[in-house]
Length: 116
Length: 113
Image (cartoon, rainbow over all chains, first blue to last red):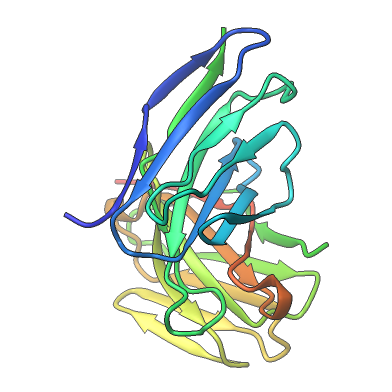
């Protein structure tokens, strides 16, 4: 089945620890995104990438890092600099093939990150 | 930066009643999208509106895009328990913001049988 796979489903972070969230897609989409979801605040964009080896900061990039070494993969690292990391993290992808700005997003099932 | 406000934050309805959620952008949008997130799930794309004044229907759901392309609404007629979830609007600015969407806070819909 085509889709986006996020792992793990639940993740716990200790004080001062970096953790990495995995996101893999087999939709052959060019663009990939990371969103953070907090109750009552909707989805906020952390980072996005439109092509391999290139990515841009979103609205809340501080304390996070990403890489895009392969088209299929866009891992997110939550660093110790992120002081309030507890949230639901959603990875998404979209096609840019049509040339239409803002193609629809396909989301993974998310990772719930909590601080111990 | 671009802001998208969505109201109401919560809506409780009896099954069979109608429901509407509204979305307002601080800037003119190139397009607006609507997503539904079931409890415990992830957002799923419902529709995209691109043209000024556009109206689209999907069965009991009616989506509108304002003439100024700064506001939008989603109306559900005769709600059912399967409509439960959070509805998000997401605005696209186009241009240099290619690929980026700004999400509203979402409206959490509860349907009482």
